[in-house]
Amino acid sequence: MQNLKNSFPEKSEKELKQIYHAFFKNFYDFIIESLKGITITQKQIDTRIEFEGIEILEKYLAQEKNIMALCGHLFNWEWLKGLVVHVPQNDIKAVYSVPSSKLVQEIISKSREKFGGEIIPMHEAKQLINSVPQNGNSIFLMVADQSPYKMAIRYDLQFLNQTTPVFQGFDKIARRNNLAVVYIDIIRKGRGQFLYKIIDIQPDNEKFFENEIIHKFFNLLEKSIHKQPSNYMWTHRRWKYKKGIDY
Image (tube, rainbow, N blue to C red; front, side, top):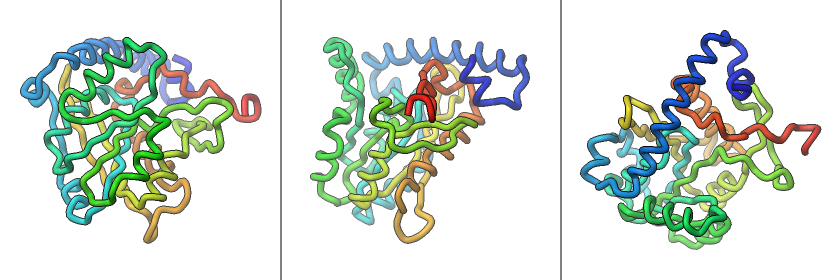
């Protein structure tokens, strides 16, 4: 509730409570959807998800440019695995934070890789992406609104009316490898029904300048949250570190 108050100071107490209750309904649905994701078939998931903007991926394949696809903690990011069979690229890798539990890691691997994609630990992402041939056949998917550890904070920006520490890694990797960058907006159409909208992120000039991708990603994510505020992971302690106090 405090996250909501800080993010939407213009909203009334009644409006915030409506978002609060709608969020928990979506959150519980997300848990069930994630569990179902372990056994769901491609045929079943295709009746529940649809995609817009596949032609953007086709464009970059034709240009032989690999792609970094960025999304936020919008429900349901887990079902993005259903995208794999619908894109023209053959090599789809999702970057993830390795959980401490081996059992949880095995469940995540089984669920996220079942349609042909591959998951790679965050600490291995830089080296792997740097080594992949630039031929347009690879997509690297990242949930990019994670909160960095206190000692790793090097950059922050304004996001949802708050100074927000952010990772810079995806910006550096994309620029170093001259990757195309897209944002995936996740729109809840109903219970267990989602639209994944692929949006092209273009540099203001010929190439992205430092941290430009970060700012454009968070700007798009903020717009997504304002459209469907109850569809974001508000229980995440996104703003636990305060500038001037913790870093």
